[in-house]
Image 1: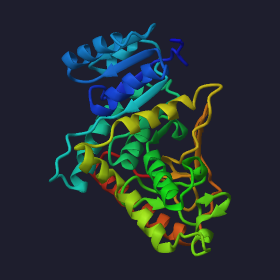
Image 2: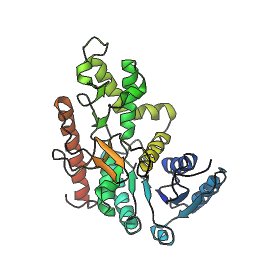
Image 3: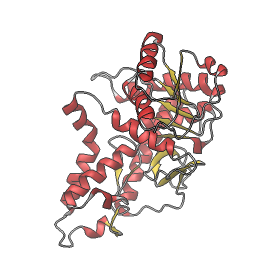
Image 4: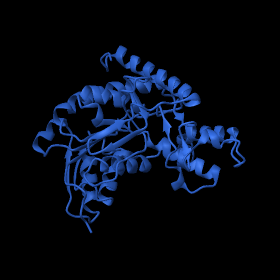
Length: 328
């Protein structure tokens, strides 16, 4: 009953935050890793969290707490890394400020942790702006591109949810529907590239199925703004759903587990969109995260992806000018 999928250490950087905490408890509940390493600056909170994890009554688990990266030298090599650290977000914080605040923090922590996480099978970033922070993490840790990604799956799962409602079909029939590009309001809600029952969504529009282009645009608007809906109704940003999807990404790196095929954001090697972190059709498996370099977007999708790519390049250049990234 209490058998875990792995005993390989799972490091959560920013463990006492909402997402970090959810990751720790979900890891135990889902029987992912029996060895958690919790990093944070508040040792008192970490101690309380460790005691609560032991009180879950799930055995055997090992929970180590660290307040400095150097403490990892006394522990077994890390296999999985979740990066959830962010500066406190306030309503008056601008995008540019968030980019540079988190850029400085992420560059500093990535450099500090780099010597101790080279054994990692996968590092997943959930600190916003996630694409830019993923790029900083990959470059400053020196991990291979296929070992570092950021979470963009929530955009796709939100798209699938709303499209299934609009088309009156079961959610499980939307497995070929996805979002691409950046994880923000420049995301690409795929139109030509998404398929339902093998038929491109662009072909379903206006074929007497009760789904018009205006209906698609309504779905698109909801998907792009969906995160704000959660904040407005719950009073805070989503944290359980990101944690669950991150654990599914980590699980996919284990032998015998199902690959994770929702598009993930990583350092793109696609000839049309090189040298930025962005979501493209991808697969996470035992060798890491791999994007389809032969993916050929068309029409509206290509136009939107180009806009998203240029937006991500602008963020990259801001971080280079600030000294948090090297030139690419």
